[in-house]
Image (cartoon, rainbow, N blue to C red; front, side):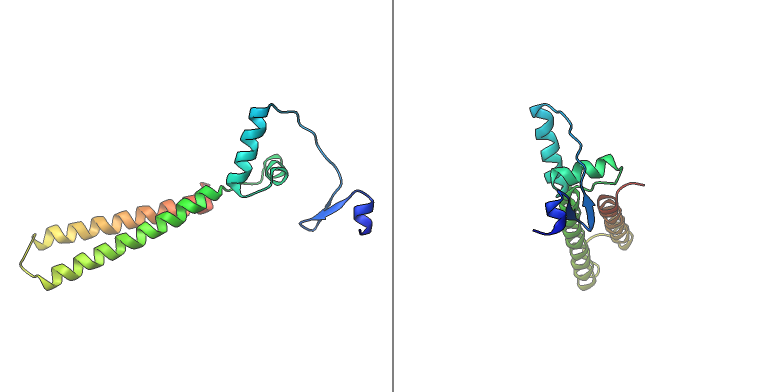
Length: 126
């Protein structure tokens, strides 16, 4: 044990923490707090400290959703690329060039919307 352990002060994240705050909660409240901490990828004490200090808490679920959206965005880009390749090889077969161009614009718009959603999920709304 080092001196800080003997004094009842432990060092975490580079800062000594020697004071404790007790908060009485119901069993349901405790379960909700515990689940929220898990969702944020944090321990309960770190989660409550962040909330009490008005530090933004990001959910791990948001990051997982952003990862999934990124994969879908990539798939959407590949589908658009394959469609463009197919249309280039099959000139004159299928829809009019203006309709194809419009569809490609729709693909690009969907990709932009997905990128925007990913940024919101990762950085949060400000």
